[in-house]
Length: 323
Image (cartoon, rainbow, N blue to C red; front, side, top):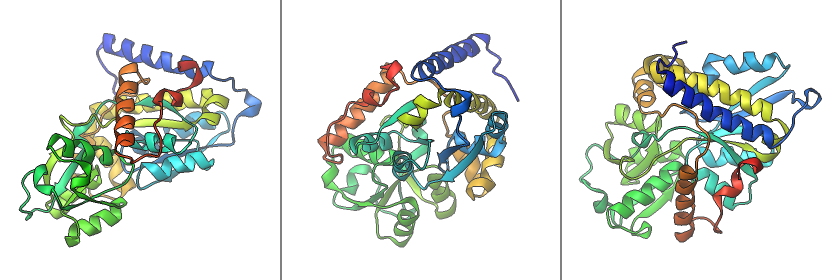
């Protein structure tokens, strides 16, 4: 595995991870007797967890403790977090908006890390022959998006930046597969979506980018766990963080190899995987006050639009020791 050559940058990364690990360890004490038989991880068709699954390094680490890893794929973030809330998953990765919807619904989740911004990894698409040339021209038209997804917030911000209100377009809340079908058939004028669905629509359908996330959203990827799991098994969470960090270091320097790993795993052609892998953000970090403030702004916006039932305080979803 390649290593980051900069000693200074490597030291800072290790220091940040040490802070994150210390916070998790302080939030609970795990004993060998209480170790789970398996760790249940939810992933999507993007991000570092896909690479981690393909490389199998987490399985090797946890096998030493007699722990198996069970992976479950989800089409997008909200159902993944619902599975964590219902107790059928322990940890998973989602975009910016899903934790806010989950927290507003009463889920007891905690942030355990995040990846750097990847604003170019999501976009608002129109068909290649669409007459629409600007976001403002979508007024009165139907736009597909998965409710509570990272692309949901992208749509909110792009409309806002174009001088439109959320209610100025007819929003069709559709999961990615259904949204693509609606997009292909012409039942929607535009589609707000993330990679690899975004790259797939570009390569296979010739979809045109009306606007991506640059200048509008950060599009962070977050790792979340059930509070009960994070506090009972902080040592397991720390191992997961360490393995994600190693994969991030490797992935940042080997995007083409990342694509080769994930293409068969997520069922896409190599060129699509290469495009998606090139737009990822790599480098797990502890949640900072600035990132927390950005999440709070998203939560406040969704409440203002009445897309979530109540106002939330994002900091309530931090491990207790980190508050």
